[in-house]
Length: 386
Ligand SMILES: [Zn+2]
Image 1 (cartoon, rainbow, N blue to C red):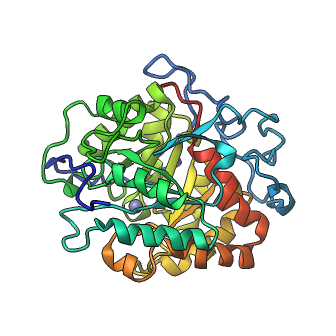
Image 2 (cartoon, rainbow, N blue to C red; image 1 turned 135 degrees about the vertical axis):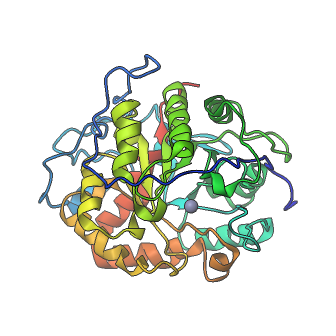
């Protein structure tokens, strides 16, 4: 493989100004009529688009996690009817995949990434990425979702080749990160960019046919949303309504979930079950995490690929707390291997080699199955509109 081939688009110099708001209760009710005139399709993942309020103190039922269907019917008896997930597909770099075939999933990671903020730490080595994937698979890993957005060296053509060579299902992202991660201006029409990359193929791929992206990655700011974040989240919502794609959000140091949910779900009509909140573990405020879980959005914890954030050791406290309160069906886990140093310390394989066995051991096989198999199948599978 040629490490240098793949997407190599520009970015933005637009400065994001962190908002200063204190997180309020998420306003997460999907509005019936959205800006595009397309009703949020709660039918896509029945039982997950509505607010799961009032479930505090509901113990998770370990026995309901058997089987391969992403639906478990464990949410107050409002689970999907049998067969309703058949139409849902995860958009991988090798084509649309039935949700039930996703398997053991690393829900947030990076095989390729570069940023002006991380000089010398670029992930550009395709051979190293292949070694990571092979070890991930050797320990039971079957799929990985790369959250590297537009203009950050996501190397999507390389992802397709890696998927062919290793058999691991890979999902690529469109979307846009914080402005500080770009040296150039992004395209003016972000929604158009996102929709094109979700439905036709990513721009700038030079490794044969450009695969389609399977999710939209955007980012908030520290405890709020600056102009750049508002613009990208608004474009992401528009692209969601046009395609059905899930929206994955980088929360700066785990903060700002309430503001993100208020904008995406409250104002822009994105169903909470189509929003994935990343990096929540970097702000180990259990009350905030429970509030986010109550909204119906996905809580994506990450970081086992390295132990560099001071809060990383709180991961299992959060997982246990949320599972005990009945939010095991909102949890996702990923390695989030962002740098070459993190890769050298273990990287992607940590998810299947270390993290999954520990979840099984400490929190039970039922929860492990939800977090690594059933929940990703729901979170990333979509009734694609295009
Ligand atoms: Zn990431």
